[in-house]
Image (cartoon, rainbow, N blue to C red; front, side):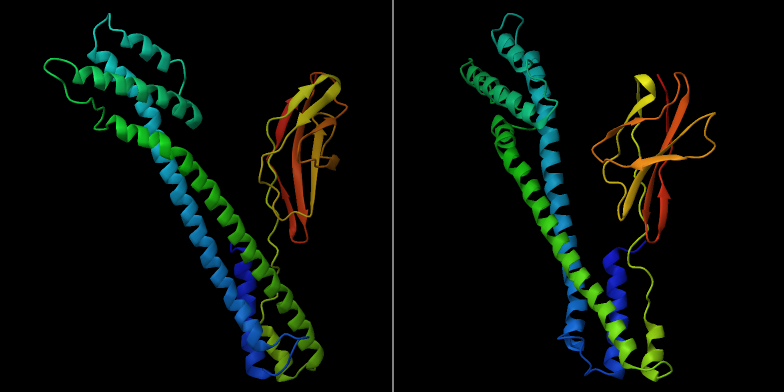
Length: 310
């Protein structure tokens, strides 16, 4: 399915073709054909900027994730590797145990544990250098302590880069929408002005058949439900999957009591933050829920979620 700006851009090109061919001097308010052509072309400029911003965000996420993955792996691998090098009574065992107090299950925890690992690793290298004969600095998976420390110290910057690129993408998307909305409005203004200017049956009016006047608003996407949670008295807590219901002008939650209702005959407006619904169902009776997303182009229903009333 084409993006909304693609539909607008295509209609803009069709509009400019008719306008330039039949009556290029006609103006719509202060809008000229030359300006409209520039505005239509600007959509593609904004699309390119949006796509470049998306690529930059993807690259930033990849850099952050690759660094974070290796950092988490070395947080675990380095203490284990040092432990394999030392004797059972070595004091380094206590320091290694301190490292393991932090589970590297998030980037923040991995950095915190990593700083402890760097300290142990640095002290262990000092101990190796003091041996007779001295041993070289310890490496794990080809990495030195300096390289590992660089991963830790650079990670906040990599995280910040992701947030910066997210902002860039948001800005680029907004610019594209503004450009698309401008052309969409002017496409429609021009069409009305052209119809008013040229009589039915004239070559100019007949040329309007070239313009695709199909809807630029897509059909609404489904607003999916999370599993519903029953509560006493036939009540149910209902929450929604984020991101659904795009393009809907109205969102409704519908339900039916199995064995009582033949159709989804009950409905209420959706509260996107989540809501509690009093279904009136008796304990032990199944209630089915779905959402209804609606706009001028049609209706889209979600998948059904069901629960047993308490």
